[in-house]
Image 1 (spheres, rainbow, N blue to C red):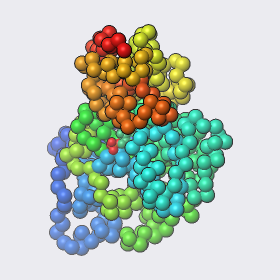
Image 2 (cartoon, helix red, strand yellow; image 1 turned 45 degrees about the vertical axis):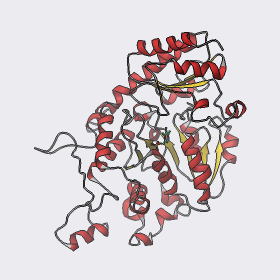
Image 3 (cartoon, rainbow, N blue to C red; image 1 turned 90 degrees about the vertical axis):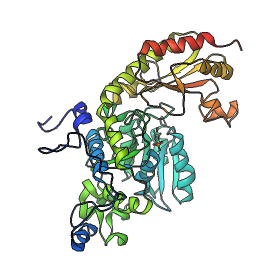
Image 4 (cartoon, protein in one colour; image 1 turned 90 degrees about the horizontal axis):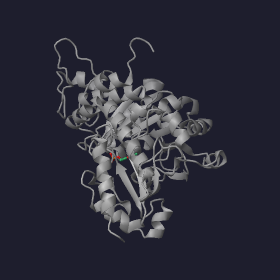
Length: 432
Ligand SMILES: *Cc1c(COP(=O)(O)O)cnc(C)c1O
């Protein structure tokens, strides 16, 4: 470690912003759509990308850039940007390098919103997807690639399936086909895993989850590792390696190099045309969350492990799924990629199926019923009666979300109160 490099806890608190003499200690909120210049020539140089500066907050805003810089440092990347949501981040991450007629490979246990984005909306745009199971064989993974494949996608820890991605294996497969690996690191956060160190090229986040951590602001982020050589596969990525006629004929890889081409294109082209920006005030609130991310993640994981162990020991529980438990199918992967703990989300089944699960939910007092996860406050969901309620029991089982499944998002409260709440709700389950 060199002297200028900081440990992750220090970066959570101080990354991205170093005030000069007399400047504010907390990051300034530049809540302004626009920026003033003395002459048209001054502004012209910005539009030609000859000078650096701000002119309109749909493209860049100083507060958002400060927070993006912190997330970039946390992930160990070379460039980063904020977006209005995690959905926008994952859409941009793929659409920046894949268009109509292209194809991507994705692991199948990913977040439902992303699954739908890839399989329905991006399909309508002419981008084809092949899904592979996270534990597919090397042959199955290899067979998923096509000549027009432009990227591989997966989640470090899948939401809510809690499968752990073998990042090195997926990165090696992507690189052998000359394409980058994009990893959604929302559930692990850079505190528990830094996918770039394992070979990922692009990292995305729904900052709505642990990064904000207080259920306050919807947001997203994209980080570029700067490691993927777009020019070595120039024919696959013409958007980065040939002139952009819509942007002064600039070739992003020539002008901004391997470290900056990908994020500059996503900002100058996709954000310009599609516009899902984060606001300065929202970015400020996200930064408050980031300042305690390392402290909260530790407590989320401690609480979740203790709760998972309690559930395992209770005879009224049918099964428990949590990667940090010995005996979990992904435990070896979790030990390798997530040695300090995985996340605060635990899923389990109550004996007695759907009616028992519904009754259990009714009697919780500390855990509140929400579709949200990864919040300081503990929350809980019974997918069969909420997000997946249009499915019958057979369809639920086929989707890997049995009618008995309860998803807990363990918060940072005192774990005794959380276990007490679960115990009490189990005691109260009506005979069914
Ligand atoms: C929530 C979530 C998203 C979507 O993020 P939003 O901020 O809700 O748009 C994407 N990926 C994962 C892993 C998520 O948990």
